[in-house]
Image (cartoon, rainbow, N blue to C red):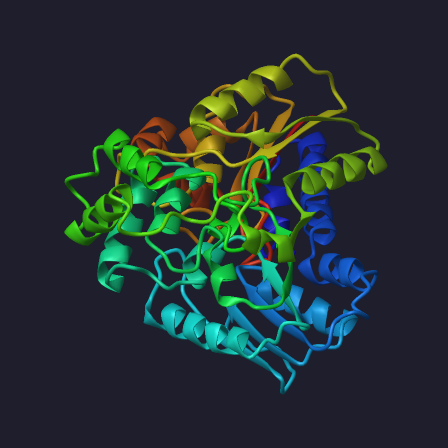
Length: 431
């Protein structure tokens, strides 16, 4: 699973740390196995009864859409389907069309794929079933904006850099879209089963991929307040302000809310989440002989602050103890470096790690921030190794350049895109 496996293991200065590094990679591999989209989707759908349906249609979008779709196809007889993915490959079925889109900034091909999906949905009759497979990244891939595409792209870039969390970002996306925030159901005549792999803390179905089949709890007022909170109201394109103002004035209908009759024909089911990943990590650690404890699967806040709290807790543990946490933190980008929240979290704690400690933060989708790494690993000798190489970790931290710091040390976690996403997992270990 890890392309630089031997480098990561051999970077341990002691035999205990080398064993610990090997075990942590084994734990992370077991996490990815547990949240495999094919297996999860197949196992769920094969036990469902679809005998009351005429034909079954499939719409899948998100980072896990290909593997989810393949699981669905092997479990259920699908008449027609559309998959919108970030991957450069196709589902090998003649009745399933695959479209490659872009993430996190939407492009014209995302819009074209969404239009094709809506045409397919129009062919669904009242007694048919539409299975919707939703995973992280779906907010950009399922894209039919109320504003010009270039304005949507600029807004997305501003939101990703300002420190807004995913719920706040998706609130804006929902109110500037025709299909997000439950609005996809306005195009559907039949019953809908949405199977969801959650990439949002707490698993709120209205936030995952901007909740296209879920009642929306946010409003145009919330969207405006978020832009004001991050001092973006006067920085976003005028079309964004125009749509939000029209919504506030009642000129544009609000997103559907709980109690709306369109939700009488939809069932939203979480089939995988960060808690599942953390449980898999704990189980594997215990199989390897460690005493393991899950601290949280809802970790949020600034990556540096969260990392320091985790390592502080780890310092109270004993040799043979493992702590597991998960969630999604944020980073306020101040520098011009390369990296992501996972690498930054690890970099921020290397001066806190005692000699027998190991700490990892890992993005389950295999892509951390603007880098090709999934995260990084550090131990009690990382700072010493860096100083021997003339690397000042503080300067890299100031420039948000965690990627190049860990690349020099050979301690990046390189997996490539994993085809799934349940946010991040952290593992701390005392060897």
